[in-house]
Amino acid sequence: MRILAIISGEYGERHVENLVKHGPKSWHIEIWQAPTVLPPVIDYPEDYLPEALPQAELILSFAEHKGVAELLPEIAQMTGATAVLVAVDDETWLPRGLARQLQGWLERIRVNSAMPKPLCSLTESDYGITRRDRLTYDDPLIAEFARYFGKPEINVQVDPATRTISASEVGRDAVCGCARYVAENLIGISVDEAEEKAGLLHHHFPCLASMVKLNDFNHDTLMHESGHQLVDYLADQIKPYKKTRYISPGKRSE
Image (cartoon, rainbow, N blue to C red; front, side, top):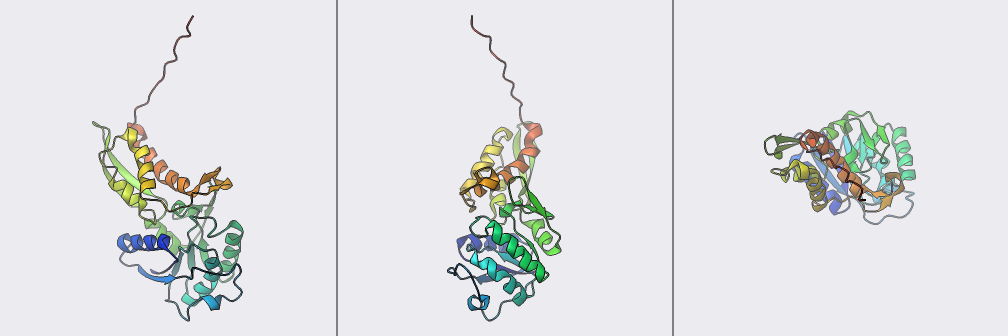
C-alpha cells in the first residue's frame, strides 16, 4: 500500500516513526511537511501546495492545523489517492462543521474518508465521533490500515496461581505506539492493579490527544477518551481473574 503521511510537527512525526517501525514492510510511506501557517480561508489551494506530490493510495493527515483539511481534496487528486484518514486528536484541527464539509468535498471526487475522534477509536469498520456515537465506513484501504493501527487491542495471559499478567501481545497498536508501550510494561502486574497501571502508562507515554474538555464527551477530554479505549479492552480480559470484594454493612449503634 502506498501512503502519503501529512505532518506539521512532533505529533505527526511520532506517528510516522511508529508506522515505519512496526507497520507491514509492504507499506511504502512518503511524508509531506505541510505549512504551519495558513490563512483562515484558503481560496487557492495551489498557492500552498508543492508542484508535485508522490503517488499514493491512502492519505494520512496528522496535520495540526485546520487549514490543511481544506487542502486534502486537492492533495487526493494530485496523488491519485482514493481514501483519506484524518486524525482528530484535537477538535481545533478539524472542527465538526469543517469535518462535514470535508466529507462532502471528498465524496464529490469519489474519495472515501474516515475522521476518528480520537484517532485510537478507529476499527476496521467504524470510528468514534463522540463518547457514544460511532460512524461506519466502507473502504478496503482504511480497513487495511486499521488492521494494524487504531483502537488498541492488548491481549494478555494471566497466571491463575499468582493472578499476575504473565504475557501480553499487541493485536492492534495505537498509531502513536502507546499500546505497545503499555503491553511491554504490564508483565508481572497483578490483575487487581492492571487497569490503574495501564491508565498511568498511557499518560506517561505520553498520549498527545487534547486535554480540552468537550461537551460531546461528557465534558471529558480526548486524552481521557483515548485512555478509556485502551483500558476497557484490557478490563474485559482480566475480569474473570479479579477478586470480588463484598462489604458487609455495620450494625447501627444503640
